[in-house]
Length: 335
Ligand code: OKP
Ligand code: ZN
Image (cartoon, rainbow, N blue to C red; front, side, top):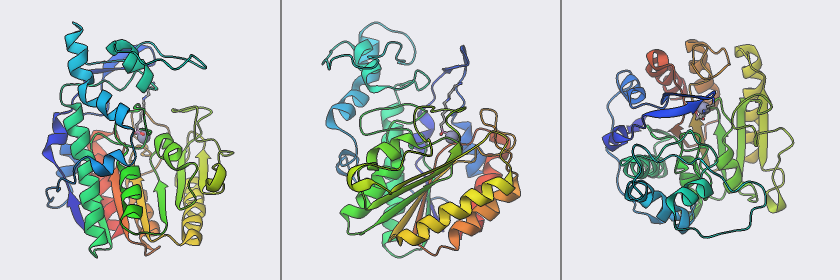
């Protein structure tokens, strides 16, 4: 299996995030990459496919915002990372504002996802990493791994949040269809619901979105990922959410995984994209499932047994000590 990685992704390093009412060190840290790189094999440098495949998923207005947000923040005289703090809640009329404060609130859905000087470059590199991993699978290798950071599955067409800015998995799913795939399945196994991915493909029949995650009645991102969200318009039936309770161990996770895999197999996709998070781990500092390191081998094996060309994008996982081991086991099981 080929692994793709761009060191520019290390430069994105927000200082703090708002967590349970306190400013704490940012959990999605560059050290996550070091932990993973120490355990997996050699990596390959991604190619640059330009902005086109990113624009196929994200709006131009949002991309313009993201590229200049940090500079605009500093120009307005602010210190530190750009963080939104006021939002146009339910039903405010659409306004086009110039002030960076208004633009941040317009494009964000949480205030835990700061924008730094290096955020755009890292998010762009992360998307190109995923696109290169896709190209590799299209060229004939059955599996590839995009070591993406920042992660992507919470980012929507025109919004950021949940440590995510560009939706790497959605960008490659859309790009695969652009390049001739008839149907693409996305199987998200991060602890958190992949709300951005769901939103992007909610009305599309040719992209199946399946997600196993902590029940949004108790866990982030709260407003998406409930079992009754099944798609709309032509996309009715092409979204499957499998929310699980806090405390979920391998026995319960395995049942949901079997159902997810069965649904993917029935869909008969030409390509499978797996947004993979290791925050389902027992020791994860911000999550509440109880998977053990050996369970990641089993997840990889189950998904690998589908025998569908597969691209994995790295999403969450914050127990940094065990992260590399868990990612390595998942990839070993998969290939
Ligand atoms: C990103 B990924 C609330 C903090 C919320 C956001 C979690 C984002 C997870 N106390 N933190 O899906 O791993
Ligand atoms: Zn997560």
